[in-house]
Length: 420
Image (cartoon, rainbow, N blue to C red):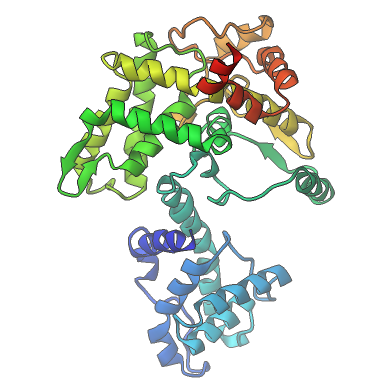
């Protein structure tokens, strides 16, 4: 994964942030030893450091840098010591730590400020807006502020983290959806369960690819969409699928298509498989036609199979949705409910997650506290029920299942056969 991160950062340095390196910004007056040599080396060394930077930024000032920042800077310097000039790295370290002559501090301050302001946007564009659209293993782990790798995580570790948060950040924001998240909190809560039944999910995707094989085109670069993109498309569609949408609801399918196709276009371009400024129109159109076919009323065999196959993941996702909401409302911190997230939020990346909520529907759901009807088909834009009204449904699943894995296992075809 580190190789993929570096590749994404190198792309951003060469393309999106090239202007930041077009002119020297280092202090190189005659009072600094080997200043001419350092000036010539000044472009390569900051680039290497920026690419190796593991966090958003440090907080160096003329008076120095906090100890945690010093340790981080030393880690970065160690990582790039064989790919940059040692003298230049020492020079940059002195500037960032404020260990520079008083006469040179004004110029050093300019470089220090610009360098520390650049590491954040570079991290965001390379990881959140590039790598997250290339890493398709489990889409749910590609989220703002997260590392795109699954990590072992125990209940005990969670409680330790909450104790730390209570002590150090009791008033910090606790949020699960924002205007900038890659998918709505419930569209993220559902796909995480692919990891609990990987064989079942892979079996589903294999079958769906066969059902839609006629829409795969062969271009100069090979089959389009390629298998990795197909894997991404099925995950994204399953994650965003409204709970009550049935395969014969043509109006509902058209509403979902209008949201899904812009997501697909953005995913391809952000991954730099094609580009916003100079796109590969042939490639884009081939993938978009494939995605459009997935939601076509003329594709009933796939749609029927798809809705049936994702149902155990839908059920498990509802358990996860309620659980994460309960934790957010009760754990240390200030809970934030992003607009529209009072109800289930299956939104995709912006601009889909910035649509204005249907406040009339949300207000009506405050009055209607009856158990939601998950059997009635979706009509119009009313694609979610209130989170509070899900409580009975979800808690019933929890009490019968004890674990999300049990829900998935009980809903597999083999389990249904054994129960008959």
